[in-house]
Image (cartoon, rainbow over all chains, first blue to last red; front, side):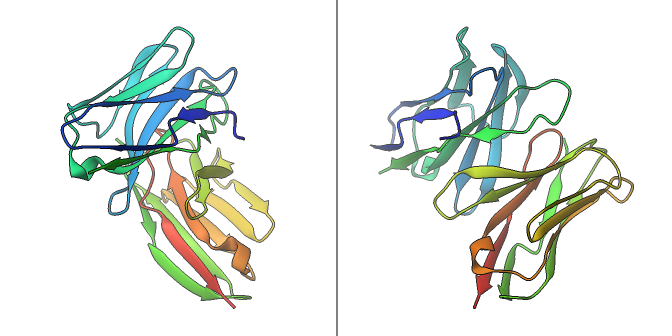
Length: 114
Length: 106
């Protein structure tokens, strides 16, 4: 157990639907990162939050949004789902700031869009 | 945005052999990370390299960083089957390379 908790582990839904993925960071970590991993796209950085504020944005579609709450957990919302959104979504957390800033990854949420 | 390129993307090697994975990055980065992902699993941190000339070793893996050349290498010594995995590098902005899928065959 890495200390980063992601739910749900698996999710199957239909095109056009909306889902929410949840991430609880490791205790003491202020920063949360979201990544999408699909077979042909590698590990794509989506977005980063630090202590409730958006810090960096990557290749996140407009249909996707995220937020980090005061208790530091984060949610990734995916709407108007398409077949191509089927992927493994990882959350990672870090302390951030000075030093090594190593990411700790959750186990991932596997999304299947039918 | 820091762009990270890894090569090779696929590597099949025999047990006992040595090989090197390369990670080139596009702009200045004061640190370089290596992660490992086993099939169907999440990513685990292997090394973080924080300065030019930094070298880290763990078992049969050794990572180094040359910030002037914008290059990091992950050297595998006397490969064993347990090292079969995908290896990713990332710069300070946590954007990852495409990964190198390593298969070690007996």
